Length: 95
Length: 241
Image (cartoon, rainbow over the protein chains, first blue to last red):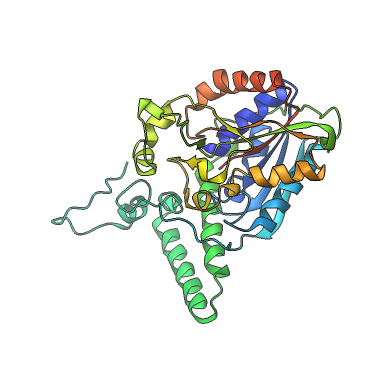
């Protein structure tokens, strides 16, 4: 549901003149197309780890760079990143 | 709705009840809540593949297969749950597009995420409840889904130790371990210092995406968008979780 929520917010922002890009995990990779979202990067990451694993700064920054690059491109833009999820250096907390 | 409660007298738990028990049930695990959307046969295939992956990891210590099984079935379940795309209730045929008027390296960018982050001492207090726990948020997910979302303001220079997260709709353990998994304040500050971003807006924003979609679409999202425009924000990086 969160991905749909962000779809609504992205559309609203574009409608007032703000350029947006969203980072969607693969499970919800169909949402940008269905909702008419201007720009999206789609990762092969599990739900709850949109930019990468805890402590995987290299992956997190790479996803960010790919997403930000779309803001300079004519929309609509879609990029599916090929990288599989990989474990990070920090164990997820016991919550 | 499936009754996921199995009493001692009624020890014969069905496969369906087992699948549903991971969806806010007796075995609640938001990483695997998608199991309710599989058929019993698919659940059997999932378990078989998962155990093969575990066996491989036992021998070579490589979790790749286990991660891959969990990911592939997650995608399959959520995609099938969607059903016919033509009947998707949030479908839009148009795509509103705002072009950035200048390069991002000169523009003001803000971060917005549906992660449920907030700053210590500034708890949005859903339902008027102070100090709602993660477990309580999961228990009250239906109430979140009927409520309009609240926007939490997170100054981009907030120290990591003051950042909190609570969200009843997704597994939060990874973002608890490292908030930059969904709220990449440090990374964005660095990218702005490098010049990739002209200016980082002084505040990031987070909300609980599990919320009333009607209220979000009709009232809340347009109001937020206007607020951000008034703040001079030209571009937004959105991180749904």
